[in-house]
Length: 173
Image (cartoon, rainbow, N blue to C red; front, side):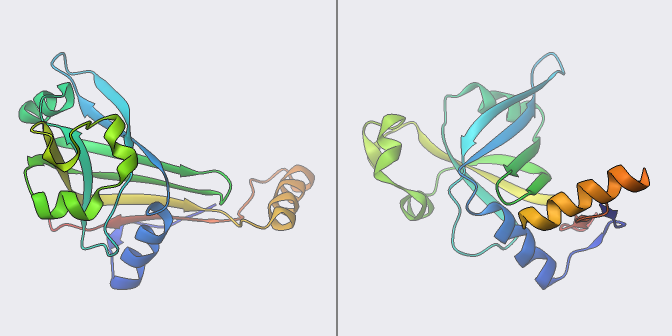
């Protein structure tokens, strides 16, 4: 894959990033626990229709990850869509937010499994992740192109260059 240097993301790159992650059902969120170890857990990926550099997740305010974020607010979000051959890693800062309007916007009846009282659940809250950096890998989704890249690599002994790898900065440092 072609590896590009990290640069400030323009509007088209932000749109591509959001297009790659918005329909992925489950995201792995990594936080730092009280011992300094990395800890990942699955999070339901429910995003708004547009991307302004912020990603949102419904959570329980009393969850352990919220305690971890009070100590270290840095998170990583990993998205994978093997059927589309796309993979995304997002780094940012997370904080707990209570916003009924935003929660209503992201709500689905399937969430009653975790929040039996629905939007009235007193433990319902949001994690707001302000994205600072992202990296994506986007390989050709065509089976023929994918197989061609593998065959070419096997015949030439050189790695396949069948996709795009790009690093983006979304927040000013």
